[in-house]
Structures are given as structure tokens and as C-alpha cells.
Image (tube, rainbow, N blue to C red):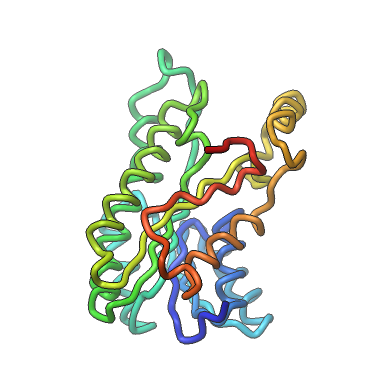
Length: 247
């Protein structure tokens, strides 16, 4: 699944799923613009990709800040010429029972996880429309499909990404642009590292494949959806959850 000549921008690329998506896309021949808040981690990722023979460039950005998003995309397109593939991966959690959840925590999660995807798509879409080719891939979550107690904000943001995916897919399909989502289940990342052993044990009982997923599992799905092999797939939610949720 070569993507030689393509340019991808991955948000939330400093760690976890975004980090692995950037590495996987670069290995497929894509020039990768890596975006996140942490400049040092982005620089390390660029060096890692370059050491493996790939091409990568760092663009520090807080995706919850509209002006920073506009500036980062302008810089990326100015330096790399275009954006063919957009991976909206940036996400945070601010978990709390809804009766105790602060409005600031609701807003922070919705802005980072959902509104940022709208902002990034808006900035990248012009390049895709111009060349009549594009891949937009939104990283949602199994909890956006089935809900999760204590994560009303997170689940709402991820469910919103699924609706956004389908709406955008219908808007741009005639221009040979696809828009899909990947819904990870229980994946071993920094975000899940704080889970208790008791929670992990209960979670694994719900996974038919009997193991925790890896960022590489998700990156493989992203690379496929970015490829020509997935050219007839759009508006789809690809589950990467070990069978935890079916149907």
C-alpha cells in the first residue's frame, strides 16, 4: 500500500496512536506533517522517522485554538505544497460523573476532540478539492458507540466525530475525497496507562480476542483507509476493538 508522493498531517502525533500513525504513514512513503503541543516530542518523532529513511516535519499547535490551527495548516501547506491525508487524532479526557462535571471540563474535551476536527478539515479541504483527491480519517472511540459512565464529555465528543465523518463524506465524495473514522477499543497508550488492574481485568473479559490492542493495530487501519485500496470506502466507521463491540 504505497503512498509515495502523498502528504499527510497527523494531529496528536507526539505520543500514542498519533505517534504510531505518523510512523506507519511515513513507512508507506508519505511525507508526514506531525502536529501536537509538545515541540520536543515532535522533534524526536521527526528524527525517528528520518532515521528510518522517511520524511517528516514538525508543526507545533494546540488544536483547541482556532488561530493556531489556521497558522499551522498555512505553514504546512506553504512548506509541503499540499495536504492529501488528514488524520484527526488529537484527544483528551476529563473524566467525572455528569452530576459533578464542570462546564470547563466539558468544553475542553469537546473543543479538543470534536471542534478541532472541524477546524482541521476546514483548513485542509481546499487543498484536497483542488487536486480532486483526499483522505480524511477521524479517530473516534468505542465509547462514542456504546457510551461509558464517567465519560459523558468524551463519549459525546467521539460520537460527534462519527456524525461529522458521515456528513463530510457526503459533502466531498463527488471530488474523490473519502472521509472515514477508526474506532479503537481498549488500546495500550499513555491515556489508558492509568487504569487500575481491576479495570483492566474487567475490560479484557469483554474482549473476545483476549488482549489489549496496540497503537500499531490502529495505525494499520489508518494506513489502509489512506490508501488507494480503500478508494471505494467512505462514511465508514472501522472498528479496531478485538471484538469488544460488534454489529
